[in-house]
Length: 90
Image 1 (cartoon, rainbow, N blue to C red):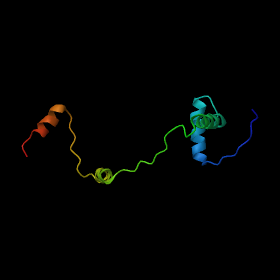
Image 2 (cartoon, rainbow, N blue to C red; image 1 turned 120 degrees about the vertical axis):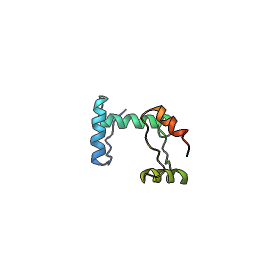
Image 3 (cartoon, helix red, strand yellow; image 1 turned 30 degrees about the horizontal axis):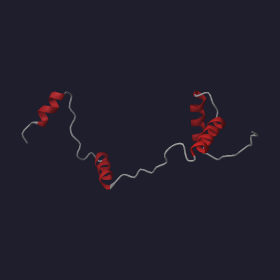
Image 4 (cartoon, rainbow, N blue to C red; image 1 turned 90 degrees about the vertical axis):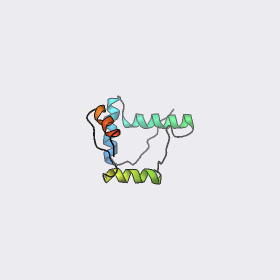
């Protein structure tokens, strides 16, 4: 099958990082893009899930609390310390 040149535009940092990783696999960017496109045609869709995971309100609040140091337990060095604290009278 005849090959055709195709231009794609990606940011420079992504290209460099991908090239380093692909070199570890023994391939170049062109080969990787070809593999991706062939797999896409074979499957009739993207060869991986494309999702947008949006945390619900409860999770957003928990993330905010952790970032602000709210509701965190103290650290324990041993299981015994944890159990002692767990069963301590309030």
